[in-house]
Amino acid sequence: MPQVDSPADIEERLKKAWRLASEGPDIATLTAAPAGQRYIVVVTPGRATFIQPCPRPGSMDPNSVQAIQRIAPPHSPSNIAVIAFTRFEPTMASMSKAIPFLGYVMGLGYVGHNVIVFEGQHAALTAGCRDADMVIVDEAMIPHLDKGWMNVIFGAMRGTQLLVFGRNGSVKRIGKKLDQAG
Image (cartoon, rainbow, N blue to C red; front, side):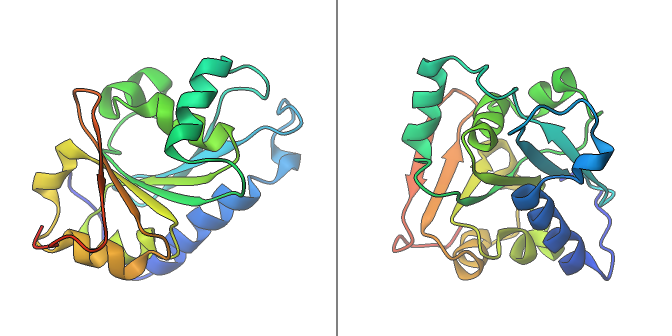
């Protein structure tokens, strides 16, 4: 786990991240954003939030979009929390090294889901997963999560889908009824 700040207002900061993910940034501040542009929101270990634009509307390959939709169908926007390493420079190259499945994360935002990414540190885990329909965990972060992390996630989220993305490209679905000794 990277060194992570634990400010007293972590709940408010993560609520703000969810709000930005669902509403997008103030369009007046983004003069070059095309209509329909979607974003993901990343919460850094220092608890700053930054907004990363997804691919431009209409620019993703249809086969890639179908792969994304198999993970999370776009019939209605879902709140998706992603637990991954967020200590990086806010550039796509740096993000891709830290989050090997970044293409999926960006694609989830592209197809219309509200996505926040944070590191899963214990002080932020409940707030970051609160009201999530789906939580995606980078398997490389699991050794850094507190014991019982699955119980915390399932207790906070409103949905039942917990996915673990492997560094080898695998995706494991973990059901809520499994033993969650984790």
